[in-house]
Image (cartoon, rainbow, N blue to C red):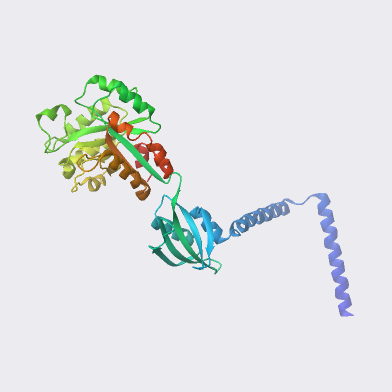
Length: 369
């Protein structure tokens, strides 16, 4: 009998609640009920989005991160082989993978470079514990001949103190940006007017600096010397910038003594910083203190190695610089501006593209890292 009363009571209560719900549906819900419903829907949508993101398998997410070219399974090694585009070294790829795995809750169990893989440029063996507890046994291999687009950057720079109509025309026929090292002093004034006829160029102040090679003949270049005061150096650089106002940076001319003298470098880098210019050491001096001195200023400093006829032919130098780009990520080629040298790099843009190297000016290259 008691049970029957409870059942009747439950039916009555259900009826009351059903009637109340019917009434509210016709009278309009109070504001607090609408807010709760909207909030509930928003939370549900947010949760659905999270679930959608989380349902993408960890292995697939890692493949997307690494931008693999192909994937296949080797029964012999009992591992999945992921092929990667050439343009990064296997070490860089491994660091990228490790960072992604740890960020997403996985664990790197084992990583080892392989030196005996004849099927790839570089490769490594990797064992991973996914967040789900599953194990991934991989071989990451860098393709021998498939390059990543824009994987590396290269700048082509010309040293020049003379411009002819033929040189200007050949420069304008180049289908990539380039830099011109221009001396701001000691050349004919018409030389600077000719510069305006050249397209796709970035100008660099090619400033003579302290060197054992300097003599009285070089005084017209107004070299920056150790005995000069900071004020004198500042004024010289100011005048150089007035002559070539679009100059993006300063590069050494001679200067093997200057780059070993910290105080002189500080006096040069101070106005460079003021004019938002970078500094390029071309001296090839092993004892240069440019990198250390540069830390005192908010500027970019780099070392580069111009073509040296005593060491190689132009062809070998061009080939070396092309190979350097995909290996290190960047490369700077510096050649004297002659018609002969221009003829030897006519197809360099095509060769660079085939290996995933993009030709850019120095400012772009320096600011890419």
